[in-house]
Image (tube, rainbow, N blue to C red):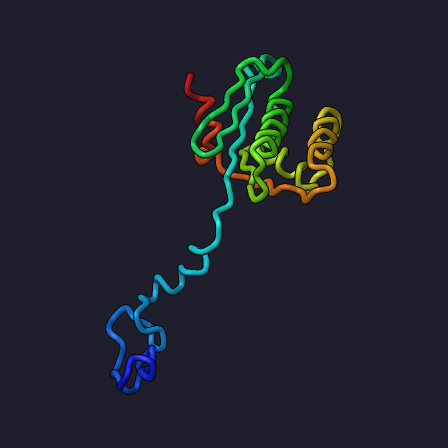
Length: 164
């Protein structure tokens, strides 16, 4: 049999049962690797963490944004409430993503109210409405960025803010 006429993969019936951990019909690929292959071929979405806070509330605000393990912290973001600080952090995260030219990213924060307002699930009232207008103005006609809630313990920006 010449190289050109030889089948690329022997039939499962001719070669016997596949070895443990290998899927029949996919000779040469372990089951786990086969299942993981489609996601491994996709580019990873950039995770951008944001957090804001103030001491006392209302009082001096501070915000942090973490992209790629690098924290950008502003400890003098003005005076306002904790909700204002969270909104300023979200807006700063979006501006950083746009400045870096990112198109596939997710904004991750631990303020459930801000995440819900940014996604349009809850109406933004009072000062939050002004922040939402700025956020939507930055988005413009483009696709609305993904804004997701994470636990406080998983928010890298919150962890960066907690370290003094």
